[in-house]
Length: 261
Image (cartoon, rainbow, N blue to C red):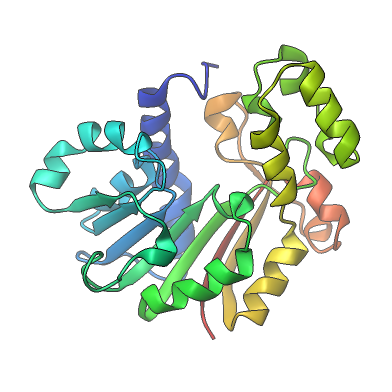
């Protein structure tokens, strides 16, 4: 195991491999990739996910609000940028003009480990309809809030708190106090608590915003844990995945693919 959030180049490479191995095959169960497909990732970071699609003949756009995250993306994908296979935009997605700034609509939109950080999730999911080509799909990958590390505590400096499961479910005041005592970044962590999302909430939003789920997989062991801990990914037990609310506590990651209903 390596320092997962410290070695950014290795993390970029892992995102490429994980996308090739798990994300793209999941999407292709419903929508096989075709050369020339336009793919946008919202919250692309260093764009390791997008690179996997570019390598398959797609063209990409990475939208990332944090400009500093795009420094590495532009460095590590300078050849793809020079070949006009990808470009990056640092801007609030709600202020983007799809035709002028993004050069048109998309066949695939990716939100991987992003939706759980969004405050108005229904607004964003509804908004993305204006970015989709006919027959286009949106991929979501996220950890249900109630899972052991749904509070993203693994990013903390405290060795104790970073490995302590489920305490993010404590009442807000007590949770905030624990973070303050450990001298952690309290606003960052409490924001995740405010924007939390469960399987049930996600599926409800999808229905209310006029989409339909065309593919889904719930994981007992998140595919990314293969690189983080050396654990083999494991799909959630079918019975457990059907038990509403309880399933959130034992499902470390979910993949969803949706399209306009």
